[in-house]
Image (cartoon, rainbow, N blue to C red; front, side):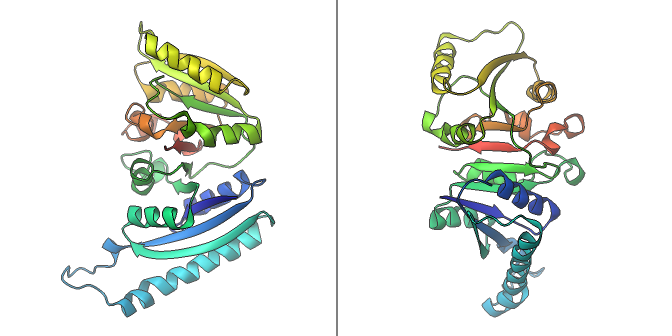
Length: 280
């Protein structure tokens, strides 16, 4: 059984992530935990010397949030096909967002976080919003980021960018192999390099390790020459009809232009292609 955490701010994009999560795990026995976090910084009124009482917090923030969570459960029952493999629970908290996520991961033994994020219409600078960005960089848990326009359909093609510097344990890839086992999708392993650069001896060895690891799956290797990572991924996603991009958290610095940059007007894949970020 999987335990899945679904942070929600009751927005349309968080609802989209919830429905994506339910459909994505259609054939998996799951406990879904819907979590709303009333951020501590939002509980302090303009006079920073005043901290609301526990009773005030309960009446102003907690009770309305609990009602909204019940409304989400009702919406799920009305709009999502019933599935006996799925159980839903609600969690309400007031804390710093990342601290709350970490606490519930530990208490509920969470296997995966699935959360929504806005695209260019809601962002001035970054592809990944602040909450999602904080989770994938500061929380050690496999996280699926679902863009606002992502609509679930059976995965046919997954892109896995790598620099072939395996600084992580291969067990980190287990969530990816679970998907490959369950859905039988194609895996496209991508290496992006600048002109006239070749894999060194260590990278070639690591490529062989990955080849052995994915031997039983439908996988292929692709070498893209482009000085801009995001441009290369954009072209690849379009040409191969990629349904999901998977990355290892330890490689986020290398691939930061895919998630944290200011050229959103030139990149479109981030509005509809989910990102699965794997942690050790």
